[in-house]
Amino acid sequence: MLDLLEQNKDITNLSSFRTPARTKYFFEITNDNFTKLKEVLAFTKINNIRKIFIWSWTNLLFAFHEFDWLIIKNSLKGIQVDWNFVEVYSWELISPFSLKLKNEYNNPVFSAWTWLPWTIGGAIAWNAWCFWLEIKDNFIECELLDTKTWEIVKMDKKAMNFTYRYSLLKDLQDKYFLIKAKFDLNWHLDISNAEDLLQERKNKQPSWFTCGSFFKNSVSNSAGKLIDEAWLKWTRIWWIKISEKHANFFINDQNWTYEDILALKDLAKQKVFEKFGIILEEEVRIITN
Image 1: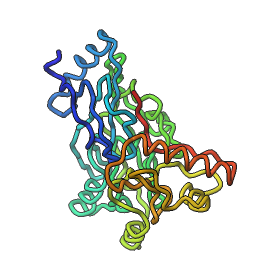
Image 2 (image 1 turned 120 degrees about the vertical axis):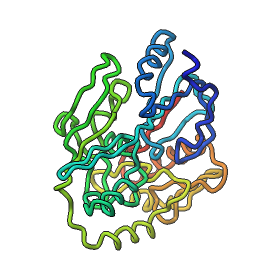
Image 3 (image 1 turned 60 degrees about the horizontal axis):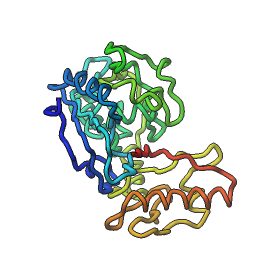
């Protein structure tokens, strides 16, 4: 069984934070070895090994140096386009996927998302949003593997229980493995100034060595504005700082660690609560040992 698993794997580059991290066991699911997943999960059950599925490399923080269990990385890729819908596997990146639809099929359904770093799987789990378009808006259904029963199940939009930055998968990532999803190609926003909006986004948000927005927006205000008004822009803890461009972005200057990130996270939450009485909620998925 161990011949299917990589051991003592460096996973630093599996997170956009790029904090140094290794895992005791590692398995990468591809279209060719998908059937081996059953053996891998049986091995974890017999040996009482904790497992974590990785759906996206952004919005992800490894809060450890050495992970004692198993990291399972999803690498399923593929796109099938019909006249009315598109089926896409869960590790396809949204940005090149949206450009492919626009340039090769003359369909702008995801044109507002051409600068997003999400994978399809991560975007569905977190119900990603950009320029008034949420993943749920043209979502039809997805195909899931129930890792307990080994059944392939389908869930439509209602069953996924989409809300702000949330879907059913966010709480059930160990139970369901997202294989692929189907989207409606006839529903899209008419954003005539999409290029201008994308350029404005690039000007206002940092793009390197960051995971994107660290906190969810509150009901009353954006997290970035709250952090900014708590006078935290440019605040630094060792090699990590709050971006001067957008206060909801943490930037790696040199060689940060996950401890630095957690310390800055706690400071931001503390200062915002002291000033506004609002508890910021993390948008980033934090994985601990």
